[in-house]
Length: 110
Image (cartoon, rainbow, N blue to C red):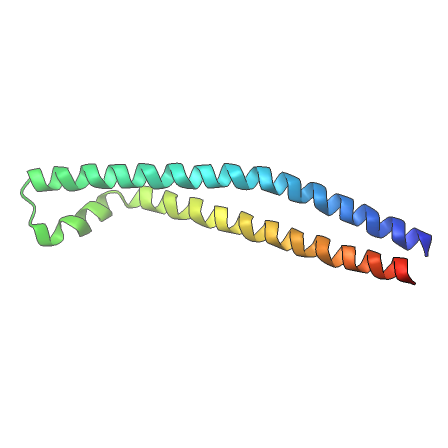
């Protein structure tokens, strides 16, 4: 039984370390997402102004501008999905730690 407690404690420690690293990575992913969003919005605005100067009909300026900067939107969307996946992974690690702590407590009580 003591060996089981040691194994559970080791798993909790390992998961906690992974969660800590995950938090650091999550910050990096959040920054990349914010930077991609900023780049997309700036370039979209510039593209809209350029198209308006070229006398493109107002009814299609937005669509044409978005098409012209679609690669930046793709990069922004990918950064967002990476951030959300990292966030979900961190939440999963938190749940794993919680379950292990419950198991550890139950083993202590036995």
